Image 1 (cartoon, rainbow, N blue to C red):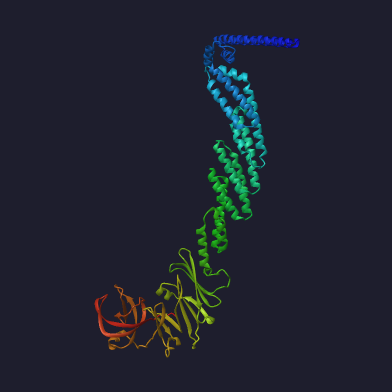
Image 2: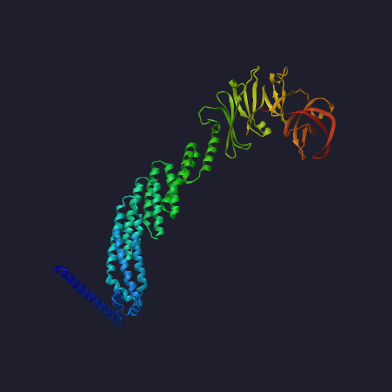
Length: 593
């Protein structure tokens, strides 16, 4: 072994010995510290200084230099567990809150604040055993000052965000609810908090709503207001400025609609506002009253227009007001009035000036509200009917016979009464000769138009038995019959030539028995007895009628025979035997051409 090696080994041994001595010294010191900690902890505990005792016992527990009174340490720390919990809880809250505040994690920060409140509620109960210890540990931690700093930081950040978005930019609503969660103390009390937040919220909300109103965005204005209103309600916070602002902006927009005579826009905006107010729970607001008043004026104007014959303007106004109310009935009433006043409108293209001629119309009959007939330039007959449900049907027929010389189109009321449906008769010059008139009748039905008859003559009249008597009939009645009086009877749906009226000599009723089985004519007065049977009265005597099918009463000319038959009739003097006259034809003595 060389000298160098000997020296090196010796140095190593010296260093090793020194290290061992140092380690032993440290261990001895650690052991002494543990003993002192236990002793000091015991003394402090006995003196009532639980915070100091807990700290010393915790130091002793964490000193693992040797085993010394471990059971006592554990027992004492168990007794002092609430002190440990307070100290640990405050330390954890302080550590987490600081990190969350720096990172802007408000939700996490409020969770830490809730943890602090929970810790405080557990150990800082007034008069509780640990109230004083909690106060002392909290003060020592400096947490109160930190919380103030952190909350003030968040408050400023949120208020700045609201201010930046008060010019109409989206965003900022969520920070309002965060501001509400910041404790009153950090605003200087509940009144100061409400005052500050009201000012900030009002500035933000009204700024956004004014921007929407200025852009004419009525729908978004109402939607935003309702959204804000509901949000405030969910947070149980009163925001009266919302109603004030939407009322002001709403009235301005509605007024501009009316000033610009944009009734459709007014109605749409008004309907939207009514729906909004209902959803928001706003009742009897100034804008709602304004809407009701203006709507009433417009409805009054529409009714006045209809009354004065401005039907198209009335319908237009009712249609524009549709968003506020279904005015189908009002429009239908105006259309009905218009169609009654100008029934030609029911016909296809009836609104075109001069499209139809010979226009005739009626109303309230035959299951129809209104019906109208007219001819077009080609001579075709057109018919339209509006039923009780206001449904309109229209029909057309071919060219009316003799249309180039057509001089009259009219409704025949007598034929209408007999058939139960409108009957149109067209009068034109006949083409045969002798100045006769060509009569063409049409039955107007809900299903369409059908020709009822066509004949020429001087005039015609409906007989009590439903037949038609044509005077000076034309050649259409058959060879050799022209110029005579013809009878047309209904066969199926049309009237066909039946026979020529024979000229029966007139006699007095008192002469009846002098002409048995002879064709004669009697002028008499027809009435119906109590049983509904037709009875003739003439020359002071009563005559029973056989074969008389009509229901027409009054002065009549009866043609027929007395066939030596008598019947019993109840008269004012009692039962009386009277002659029976067999009627073959009957005609009114009051002829209407």
